[in-house]
Length: 392
Image (tube, rainbow, N blue to C red; front, side, top):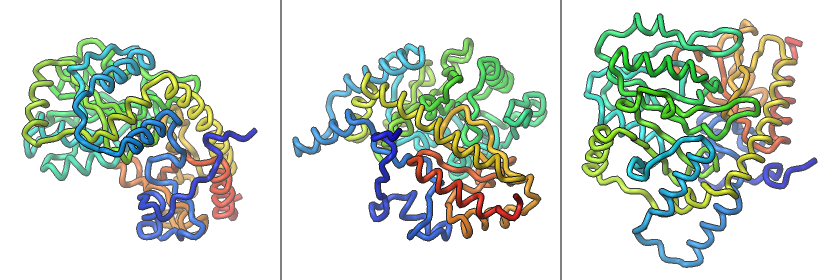
């Protein structure tokens, strides 16, 4: 059975799209028949309710300053309460130019040059980039590996702390490993931050993209952490509207909120109206129904991809509990990273993210974006099996 929402192939070449138009320059994968599976955006149109909001703005034809964000704030409140069981007050919400910008603003607001900022690696590569650019030190706390998935290693991390660390940037659900952290694990993170007096920045941008059988708990629902907690959420990953560069930094604690508000004011940061209108439309019953269909489709893509990876000796795909990003271990091939990467890029003509960019623990991995029509995933699977056919 075909799915009219996600099966159509929508050409993206020549649209100034980073994922497809930069693929050949960065990876050497030919644009003529290459498959872009790197940048974490989807090859799907957003729900019709979002498109209608954009068309309404275009029909009006005047693109001035947005003067009333009450509908937008109410939509965020509705979504968090109904989808995540989290009651948010409107005054807690700040809108940034995406969550990389939100992370950078948190680092700028709550840390000083030379401070250590903790990352549980491997983890989303943009975190380390903005931390280093701000003159702070990245402190990598490697995740442990048990039963084929990542787990916390608090004893080891406690031993690493020197007292210079002032912040932990946490990824929940985890990118690139696809973990949905348990409540016990989240409580462990909260206790770790309290032991070492760390501000906790919880990036939960993938919280809507949770596979069947798993359930995400917002860090804000963990007791005793409010006085050091910064929550980050967005519509952009869920609804494939990352080009709007809008995200939310949500801060329950008044003291922390005051500091962030002052920094936002000093930098003159304000949101763009397209992002707010699209987010308001997305956080709706119509948007929620679309997300349900999306997750079911992504689960189907995951099944196709994992089955193919399982047929290639030496390759293992980490169980995907959330996100649409497959994290594939090539260590069992005995190949060097340059050798297996060349097979994927040159022979299979697929552009994935390179594992080492995610920090310690990513050296023998590649990350593949599965948020693309199933026929594209199937083609990628065929090519991967051909590229490693000598192992079979």
